[in-house]
Length: 428
Image 1 (tube, rainbow, N blue to C red):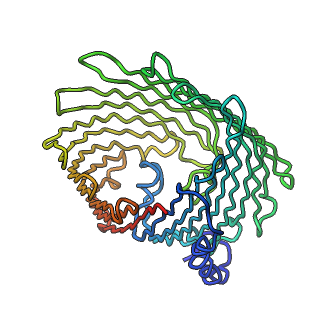
Image 2 (image 1 turned 90 degrees about the vertical axis):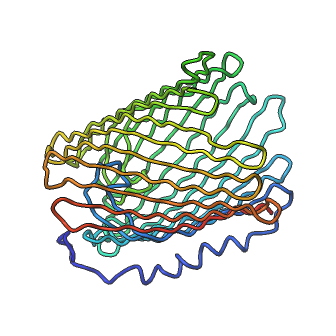
Image 3 (image 1 turned 180 degrees about the vertical axis):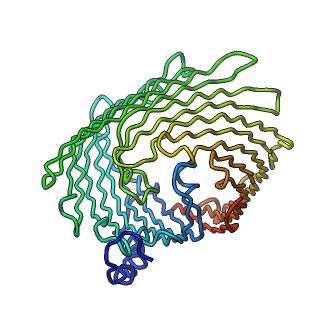
């Protein structure tokens, strides 16, 4: 079904399937590396998800199946040089939104070189190419190329200062009026104080974007400020505060398949407490305000959650611990009041860790959604198991994750979701 009003074109996934399968394997043809600090890591992931899960209860409720592949080669074995190359291949097939069915291919490379100077200086270069193709929406297809050099000055356990600049060029093959190019700059700083008990972090990004054929220019800015402090107090161990604000493009967010601009600001306050020798607790309060430029899902939200963790077994060979999470979330849409919601969450987690061999994790959560439009009410349940195994004398780390989800709707058919992910990290 094509709900965009644009005549359907020949399916495009067929002509892209070869790249999704073969290109990740091209990393195996890398030239021989020199040095011991080398690794290969990657994952294969297949399954089914809800769009609602990806966007923190913000998006329209729809299901999609996916196939994700990732492969990365990392070499830090040279005296002063480290480099990394990677690829991501992601395919999505939506249940109701056929116009969003797509395949995205991303290729990244980075170089870091420590300059032979009296001060610790690190020169870096990152490049990225992303290609996104849709099944029935050619006007949304684009090719993106990013290049940005950087310079970092640092002193271990004391401070880190970084400055970078770059070009982000996006081309739409079937909609050239949407082509855009952005020049951006980014600065950040990280400072440890009071013998490491306090940490201050801040960053600022400025982007000047131009769409020549649309005669449009736009400035985007992002700012993040963080502060953490380690207390010497029987009631509180540490606390952290984060404030964020700026403007973003939704295609910068990895999971978005719809291209919208928005402004946002938010806060995050978290405290950690030691209840006893084997029991810890945390309390977190999060707020977020989002205003879209040409989309009707402007909203504001807040979340309050607390997690309690207890260690039941702790010795040299094994540990067993568990935790319980309680959360409350409220989201209010200024232009879609029927989508206003409250969500109550309870989560459980149990972990068994065996030194140097394997770790098993079992976790579950239940989420109850209460919408202003009661016909949208639902209950969502999730269960996941994670098994991590160390092999080949500690050189290979293998992780297998399985997830199952069930959603019970008030006014529509229930749905199930299953996914499996296999991940490896091999030290060469």
